[in-house]
Length: 279
Image (tube, helix red, strand yellow):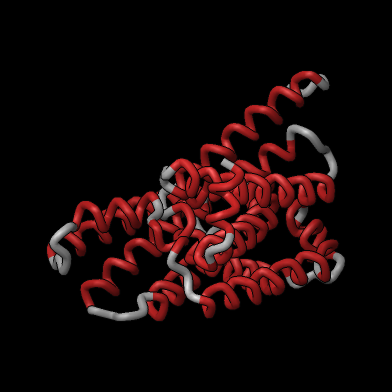
């Protein structure tokens, strides 16, 4: 097995997949801690369905690069959910649920009515559950992901205390001069971009797993915000790296394998938490 692994690691497409997968997992985990604590865990699910709907429209329009449509639409919806969702009669969780099912149904309906492929079911399945696109990345896409990851990590390092304040008490954050609305605006853009990239790794239906499981696993082991954030990043990176390697060696779907490893690690962390007296 080690010889087989060494053989695969010599290929650029495997190296690119590992780099991008690890970076996406890192960014998702950092965002995940804040989103889970703010009760916005399923925003990844809702926005990924929005991205799926936009991808379907882009396919119908015949766009060679669907990102030019998918990314702006996802960013706009993220801003509406995070910046306006709590100031309207329809609160965040209800808005996410409504947007999620609507976009999913609309996307599939467009794909079905204006089908441009002979294998509609296969195309929809690979979009929803991930495909081999993570193994066919171009060098430009890898560099874009690396730049984005640096931006996300710097954002969390430079604004760590403001993120902490906004996560736990927005009223206090406003009282000490934090521009909460501006924070939500920037966070919305980052979340949207990460989700569009993460769909390459796990598909639109499994994106939430990258956000939720590392955060929940680390919360079983640590109590402090800093400890949870660091542990979440470490767990997410290890799970993504291991999941991609297992997928390549075993020939299993990349997205489902990465999520499976995340679930397994969560089970281990849950048991450790119980042993240390956690609920």
